[in-house]
View (tube, one colour):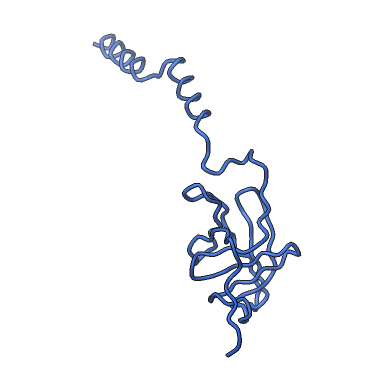
Length: 138
């Protein structure tokens, strides 16, 4: 009785194991599938204007940033501060107009093949072809 149970357990255990060839094929399939945002690509400069259609973000070479809630670059920004890049997929924004300096983590990813910044509490921002429009006079 015990022998039959041991034989059955052995058959079930062997049947449940993946073969070496299957494991290797699985690993090769994973390695050949490119990531949406490939870390081996040349790092891209993030300086410039970014927009989600409602808000604009300007990232300067001097590590300063400004967030505008309107399409007018002459309006006072709703937030400004400094920014930095931690890795190929993460950057941070540290606002100046808060009582406690608290850096916000921003994901850098690709959405529908375009580079995007995803700040907390905002829709994804895509690189803007042009700066926001400028409203003249009042």
